[in-house]
Amino acid sequence: LDRKFDIVSPILHEFTFQAMVYDLLPIKNNVYTYEDTNSEGLTSKKQIILDENNQIWEELRHEFIGDVNGLLEKKLNDAQNLEKETKSAQRLREKIGKSAKLLDAKKNLAPFYNLAQNCMDRYTKLKVDIEQDLAVGEKTDNEKSLAKIFLDDGLSYKDKVRVILLYILRNGPQTKDWYESALNTHANVPENEQNMIRNLQLMDIDLYDDQKDSIGKYN
Image (cartoon, rainbow, N blue to C red; front, side, top):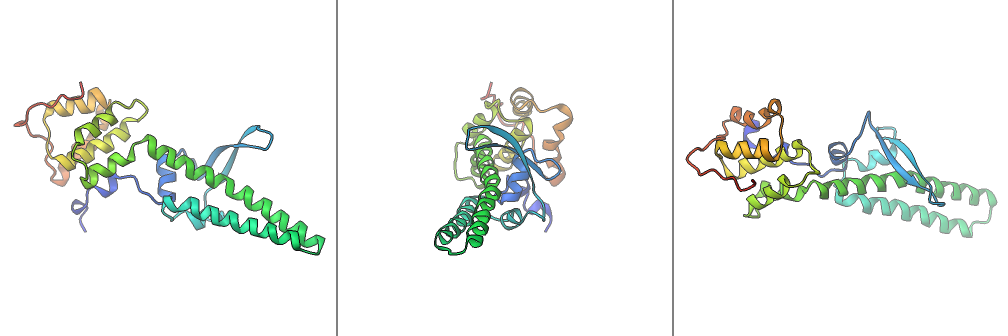
């Protein structure tokens, strides 16, 4: 299908684990850096490589983000059941081997709990729920939602542009004054990046409606 049949989907944040990790977190060369706190309360930086050689990543990366913690819990429970079996084992070698597997399991799962939690923290900070509301039109107070995005200094201009695009697609053409206010005053989008908005016209989307009154609600 021509992309004009569905312009909204590429703008939205996705909800599979891999998509959220790469979209929301600072992953460089497939390496995730995180802070780990040991039993003594000391914190250190650690890294994991997110590629096909990481078995846990391979199992989880295409899963819905809401299911990831449950899948991790299942893996941890499997490891704990292994520990219970160890207590009834008769041979010392079996005990040592199973205990080592339990420690490895806990060590290997820990960064993925961290990864999933950071994704959800970023999801909340970016107010992705507002994106969803604008996309499906379940809430009518879109201007109030847009104001929340504009007033959040913690969001980058690219995050704000994403919501502006959705607002335009949901509410139709706006005035030139509205664009001036949205892009320059509130989202602080660099001039050379504003084509992210203007290029909607290449897909036959009308941007300007000078018959409307200037909005100016976010001044």
